[in-house]
Length: 485
Ligand code: DUC
Ligand code: ZN
Ligand code: ZN
Ligand code: ZN
Image 1 (cartoon, rainbow, N blue to C red):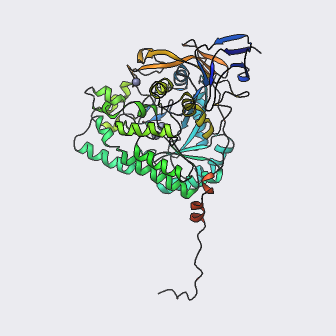
Image 2 (tube, rainbow, N blue to C red):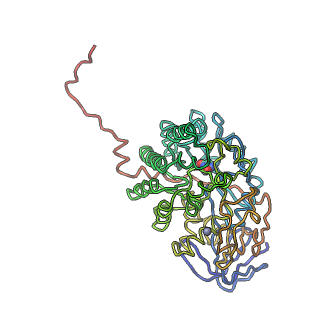
């Protein structure tokens, strides 16, 4: 079988930096060492050789708010590879009443076009006996072990606390992980109604309708419910100090809780919604919305200290035309922004080049931590013999100005337009196949494979607080009075 060798680079993993060559054969890393030879040579002089990025949060071709997100598994994974990301985890979204297995099949019909490997999370958008029963097969037969619950989008995707508690308990029993979109959907709906009634119809009202308090409240609530159910909890798109504080506290108490800031929240702020141009503001409408500088500082501090674990995109891209559905009513602007191609260069530029993160920490939050939490390490997220050859050869000197004109995404704008980045892939390899070649994108549609994952341990049950919760001791009473009539 033909071999590829990556020569003269510096390997950077989550915990090591060392100079060595990497030999790839049959889609796997087969040797790491000095002076290696291969049929094809990729020169990594001046570059870091890192595990390809994993984006744990994407919505490709997702039916949402009366339309479909525009990037599909082809353009979305092409954008991913262009930016050094070699695996995405997309959300299977059953419509209310639809079975989980049925919805998974629908996603499988779309994902065959993927250019890089992918996995799924399952969303629990309604609750009933069928969902309860199918969860076991989804985990054990389908290899999908992570289940998302929307605490917002009332009347559409939102689940109530009783449903969430039931689902969390089932996941604890099956060894799965609960995910939450944490915003108080009842309060958001009321704020939206009031804003519209008062004539606040523009995109800035979107931010007013989803203040940090609704996210902080829901994050706290989800953590407490997860604690009562004994399930590990992963909080998606953590955007503010209130939510971060709850996650930080839970982690300090030994609870297995993770927070996932997005590159958008780390680098863009709420002033975008006050831009005079309606399209500019609407293109940046996503939930949770962008926040102010204090919240951004909190998220960076979380990544630096380890209280926040990973960086994602929530890539859910809509065209300007799709966004315009919400002219005159901000609640109808499809929620979502892109970021797949820009997550790694933007995080490197604003994280590593500023001294906030070391290159090793960069690898941890963009790849290795994700693979470990989602239980696909070291197949993914590692430069180790036997691991998949999902590798990015990262040139820290390469620069570009981000622009929609040169992006892979199928939409007509980019929320990072005009940002200068320094640090870009020279090569990206997806299971050994060179998909970015000296900066040039050469992807192959359908190359991507589904990554199965196994269930882990429901570790929150180890805490004494959980034992107290679940072992009530009835008082043995004497002299119980006769019941009244
Ligand atoms: N938030 C978004 O902005 N888009 C997709 C779903 C979500 O929760
Ligand atoms: Zn969400
Ligand atoms: Zn999302
Ligand atoms: Zn910038």
